[in-house]
Length: 105
Image 1 (cartoon, rainbow, N blue to C red):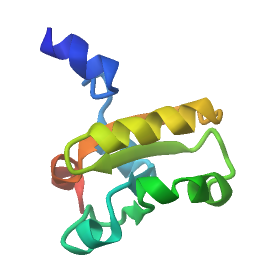
Image 2: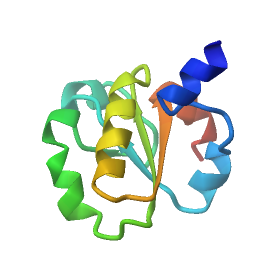
Image 3: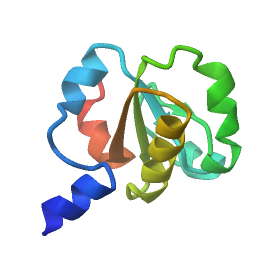
């Protein structure tokens, strides 16, 4: 049941985030600027969810690998859905930035 729920919100474990990051994936942190300033994944780009339209102008290649993250995985799930709706094809919900941090160099 828990795995089904994880897959529904884009947190399934069929993806190797470490490999994607090592291959140059863009990591988008969708938390507020204050949250980001208090700690973040090294190399993440901070675009708060409420300013998310900005992503659409900054990442023109819709086949770019993108990993979204936030505090718990809920906002990053929303960001993933927005990107997919706009035609981005390789978007993954990385969940918490703290979980992704284990892949930081």
